[in-house]
Image (cartoon, rainbow, N blue to C red):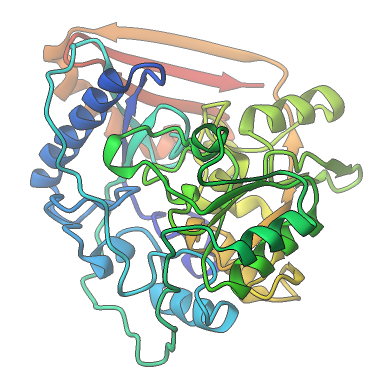
Length: 436
C-alpha cells in the first residue's frame, strides 16, 4: 500500500484482504476438471452476492452478477487507470495485433456448463492479507481482491482502436509459409501434433483454444517473425508462457499462439541484485535458478508451474509479498516485441508508459515481453512456522480477530506471511511463517 497507485496499472492496493479460491484440478480427467470449475464458479457467485461489484475476477463469465459481460465494470475492478491503458493500447497497437479486454467488442466465454456435484475434499477457500496471497498459479481458479470499485464509465473519446482483425477458420497458405520460413517449430491445424500443441491448462470444454498455428520460439528473432507474419495476414498474435490463464486467452483462437517456454536466459547484476530473465521461465524455474546460482529471490506466487511472465505482468502475490511487495512492483524494465515486430525496451526513462503498463497490466500489455528486468533480494536462510487448526464454528471469530491484527502483522519489519485457510467447512487452518 505504500506504492503510489499511479505508478502501476495494477489497482488493487486498497484491498482490505484477498479471498483466494484455490482448486486442485485433475488435468487427466476432463469430468473432474469440469466439476471443479463449476464448483469454483458457484462459490464465486455466492461471494459476489455479498459484495456486488467490489471484487475482481480473473476472467469474464456471462452469468457473473457483476461482470455479466460488462467490460467497463470488470476492468475498473482491477486496474488503476483503464482510460490510460486504452490510450497506450491505441498508440502501441492500433491494428489490434495483440488480444485485449480493452476492446469494446471482446466477448466473454459462456460459463454455463453441465453441473455435476463435486466431492467435499476438492477445494479450499483461503483468506489472506492483501500483501500475502498468490493471485495466480496452476490450481488457481479465482482471485478476488475485496475493494471499492469506481463506477465511473471508461472514457473512450480519446482512443481510436481499429476493430479486431477477422479470425480465419482455416490456415492460409501465406501465413503458414511465412511462419515456416523464419521459425523452426510450427504446428498448424490438421497436423497430428496440433491438439497437444494448442493445449492449455484449463481444459473446460467450452473454451478449448483453436489457434490457426502454434509456434514454439527459440529466440527473440522468432518472436519478431511470428508477430510480423500474423500482422501481415490480419490475424492476432498471443504470448503463451505457462498456459495457466483461466480464459485460455494464450491459446489464441483464430490467431497465432507464440509459445515462449524456451526463452530461458538469466543474468544478475551482482552489485544491484537486478535480475534479467527470459519470458519462458515458470516461477519454479526462476526461483530455483536464482536461489541456487545467486542466493537471491523475487516476490511472486506460490505455485511453481505458473508462467513467470503472466505472474509478473498481472500482479504476483505470494509468501514474500509482505516483505518485498508485489512481483509487478519489482519490474525495472522489459524488452518486448511491438505490434510491428520490432524489439523495444521500456524503463523509467524509455517508453515509460509501457513500463507502467507492464506493472500490473497483465494480458492487456500491447506487446510480447521477451525479457524482464526485476529487482531481486537476498534469499531467506531460515523459515519458522506456526500452524493452528480450529473447528469450522470458530471461523467467524478467528477471521474477525485476525483482520483486527492485520496492520501489525503485515508490517514488513516482522518479515512474515499470514493467512487463513478454510477447507470446505471441514476445518479452519491458521498458519503463519516468519523469515530470517
